[in-house]
Image (cartoon, rainbow, N blue to C red):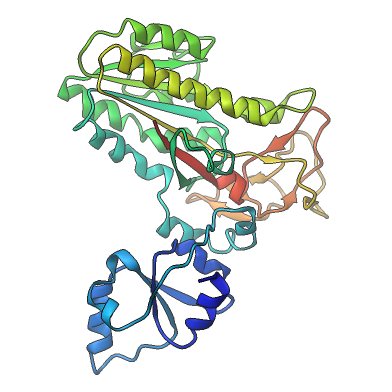
Length: 356
């Protein structure tokens, strides 16, 4: 059944269907998503309750409701650029119905029940849309539930060293790899909270990490890596970047890391997550805001709390960051800028959670 046919059917009856909750944003009329069939059934059977409106019932949680309402198949992918029409206004709904980057820590910790070596690769700038169709990796959409900026997103993922604090008492050794000086870079220190300076190695390329893993002794290890994604090509790069080639290199590195550890005899899991995606300047729909006069350094997709004329969706208790909706920009691209981030859009906010 097509989505428009489901839309029409919902005007007559609740429907049981395996569909992502974000697909409901395509409907003009408000539609409720039922993720607990038993509770909904109690409401239906309660003579004091009056059920009105449209209801989509999750197929996996329908229970006995499958004998009362139609069950249909509807293949709809909400993770496409058209999501930009509704994501900004429904961002809280998206947070409630998607895995967010702030929730990944426990998944990583739980994986140690199955694996002796767990690797977390933090990718600086990669959109889910750029890897969703790949068949050589397992990837799922994940929502950036903080500002789409590295200084907010990476710390939200690692949660102040929660993973090392959990794994070290279980006998795991820590290994960190990044591009910056651990002792001189404040952001690096936040990302590698729980690591000592001797456990974090500064590297110039991913090949150095692969080489280090060749000599990794058998045992329990947690490896945390920062790998550049598309961020550096979006901000300061002359000549149009070959995005497809760069993404292929990222995936190739992840596969090589897994193969290297497996060849050494380790039971290893390699996870990867990006801090944000990139929205590229080739998008013809961009609109530069009127009435905002850029002075000095101007962020393209967000305002800081102390800026005059700020607009957008505020984040944080004191509104530190005000994120702009798609397709608005505060200024035009410079000649060496190919993309930007910091706002709310499908491209910036939906990143891949990759399992190799």
